[in-house]
Image (tube, rainbow, N blue to C red; front, top):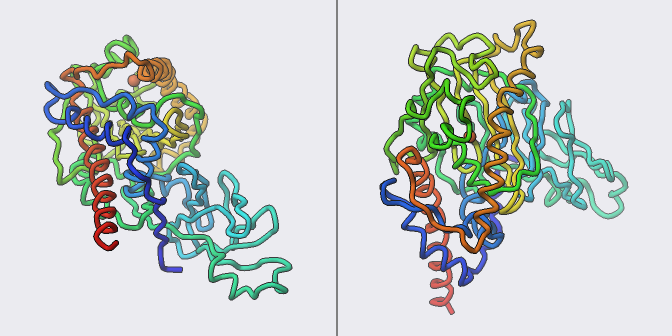
Length: 415
Ligand SMILES: [Fe+2]
């Protein structure tokens, strides 16, 4: 089972409406002074989302969790990326593996939300079992039709290619993506002192049924323009005037990120505006006085704060809805503190103050984008990260569309 599955979705023909959107994208990149927002259909069209599933979600590195969630051999968590239920686990050899959770017999989804299994996963429907490498181990009453060896040829759980960056586990469904880490050089340097790969994780919480597009979640999270207005008062400890930006670097384009400074050391998104846990010892004074916001595209957003890291894994439910998997990482020494779990609800409550305001605003944006009067607006200086995000998207949209037209040309030539 050393081979990873390559399982891209069937290519889709480019309809006139998709070609029309593709022809309008260039105006959304370049200098923030001149760029305008993306066509509204990019956020609202289910056809466009089907295109994105192929152009981005099949071809890039998708975050499925953090190694801190599965510290022991046999630990696993379940996650569904678009239509694919997956098991993310630590096998008996201490290797992180991600495999399909759809039973190859009749499709039943295997595995609880999270747990630990010593040897096998069992399908709840007909009790077929699979080991932690996806190999079929038993299939009750099947002897009359096929031996176990015969069944194993096409009834094992497909194992998906993975890469781990700073403890975050990423998968690549088409098996062709270039390595992720070399495209995260600058961000890796920015968060090196957090030692994210060594952190522990608390069980994630799913906030479901958020009626807006997955891309808008990043946009809200990565632009500091709105914090002064939507989060007036509660965001003043991290004023938008202290936000700084990096220039876009096409050779290091795995993430869009920017820091926002705090007025005081060890600020945080809590009711007291201060960190509730001990500051990470290895941080510089500058790092204690800022939050580093980063979108590792397409579906991980995090804020590296002085005592740990908060993150969202964005799980689209189509073009018009997302589930947010919310998680927190901390040094293991912090998680060993006797009052760690007593304090944790206050951390979640703190984040909720901002999230509740963002939920209201994001719903309003999505409603507006569906209007026939939706406009392609100009960006403000503090929205510099948004044309950068657009650049990341458009490059991938165009690469995929070009590959389709090249393929169809090839087919025509052969015919
Ligand atoms: Fe916000």
